[in-house]
Length: 428
Image 1: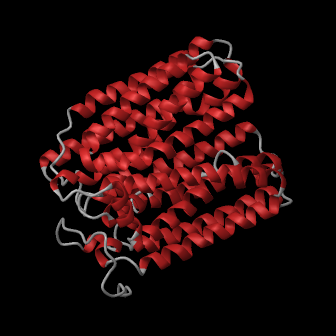
Image 2 (image 1 turned 60 degrees about the vertical axis):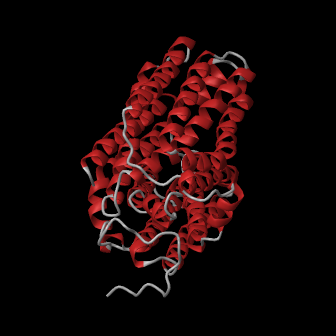
């Protein structure tokens, strides 16, 4: 990595931390703000959360193309300005239409930030440093969300609208500060669509869908996000309250345990996974999450004391955090290494689209099931976790040695976008 790439990477990491810090101020309190503080009711609050998902699904297919054509930095700056306007207007909105329009702008901006920042990390890292770069990004995101949520919780007062307006204003300020910082980043030159023969957007998507390894990784990604992230604040929380009798304070402790595990374990885990095949690391995550679902089942379906049930439920979230820490230096770098030269933005946006789909479907499926069908809920997601292991091992047969074992790369040139000419040899 050159000195210029290192300087750019440091600013990118600062940007990740600031954006997460700003989001942490508002995300945990969005439902309460819309439904109770603004008095718009639970239906409008639910629609706001749905608007976030819909806005992301609409803009992400176009975001990938824009990143490829214009580069990630201009797209990121535009997304930050949109998110800042959305956050500020959300803090001032007093009617349902104004709240929904503001949420759409904020959701679209947030959604585009993810692939833009990921592509910047790809362009400022080498094959040897990419896993550590994405692990650092994930660490800073969780730290920023945790600190922002903690500070925001001490600032809000449900009896004063102005306290929530202040939170959204701080979030908008974080996005605008990030615009200033990112404007100083000097990205290394990377190929754009203008540098190559013109391709249509339809052709780019056709090329992506023709990459069997990327399609399999997308299916695997959908299951990962559906079976874990899509359950955190919906199905698993409902199961804990309804089946295990977990209090709201214990649920908060469980969420804190998840974040703490990520923050504490991230770099220790990184040393463990850096020299191991990526697909086997993902397969191991599936097994860890299967254990987590068994522990959750004990919390809600066992016959132990309430203290034991609470401890088991908190342990479930901690085990999920361990799996997340293993995935952060694994999945995102793999998406980048599967992308043909100059197409990282398209691939990052496609994978972000898969993530948003999973996060939209996961709560819709898991929430009602967890609230009333306790045993089927645990069994279903236990099987999904085992499916992660099976899909990861199958994906391993589609990857080149450099894609699955990047530490063996002898240069920055990584085999991308194509299936191996022959199966990857088994490790000794």
